[in-house]
Image 1 (cartoon, rainbow, N blue to C red):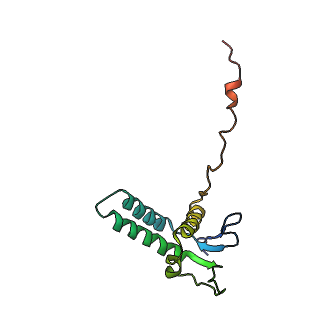
Image 2: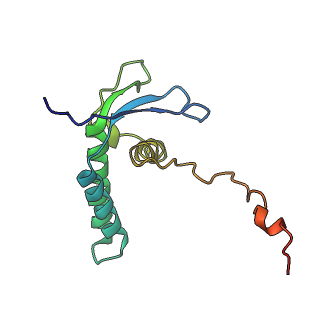
Image 3: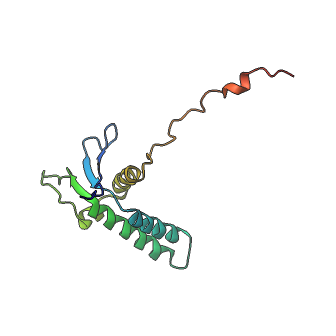
Length: 135
């Protein structure tokens, strides 16, 4: 009997933000998929001749990967009709809203919080600096 690799799902919550109440459960990406999305995004930003086209291609790839990763979400239309997760539904969202969601997803799958370092103080003085030196 072998060991089956784990399938990791992430529950993205937006408590304490303007999107409080939004809940999205997503699956992760494989390392190869994450590298592909990262490589595509990096090459689009490097500034080749087709930068605009590269950015569109990179964002299209990222949005497709994100849409494919959605397991569940509680997004609804104004008339309370549930919005089924799909690439088209994701692409219809406003940019700022979508970037908040995608940032939370990327933070979850990479283990890096989007708020890392936010409101971080400089910390205390390193203790060794306070130890008197004997000469």
